[in-house]
Length: 143
Ligand SMILES: CC(C)(COP(=O)(O)OP(=O)(O)OC[C@H]1O[C@@H](n2cnc3c(N)ncnc32)[C@H](O)[C@@H]1OP(=O)(O)O)[C@@H](O)C(=O)NCCC(=O)NCCS
Image (cartoon, protein in one colour):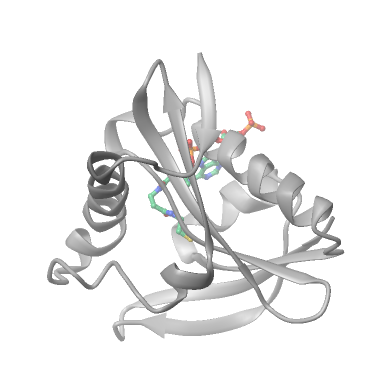
């Protein structure tokens, strides 16, 4: 059974940030702790559990009037390509729409651009180089 909700227990929060670190920061040689930022206080956290096992995560932020932004999207390495990324993205989009937003934006890593295009996002422009190496693209989708 698939459940998408925020982590609840201290153990679930540890697993949530650990997945974020392992998938999004460790491969870039960044230290533990670099996976967190101030937006974790205000952002909404999404965790996908399949039969109780954490598979995918995402955070939903506000990016101004009527605009939502999804950040820190990650699927556990051994679980990629099984549809979990699509499911967690759709959950963030539904929530952002219910909240009255009309647009979702995100900064995609170059190798994730095709994934977001499959979900209906369009490139707006080249954005930042994370840690000086990883090109990102600003993408958007009407909700
Ligand atoms: C990118 C990522 C979130 C995608 O999640 P996923 O669970 O592997 O993707 P899904 O299985 O849900 O795929 C959804 C669709 O996108 C396609 N897709 C997934 N990854 C793709 C890729 N790299 N290139 C092209 N298409 C891709 C799938 O074929 C599928 O298409 P369909 O539903 O039309 O058949 C995940 O692979 C990941 O965490 N990667 C490493 C971290 C990362 O890049 N995070 C994003 C930072 S911006």
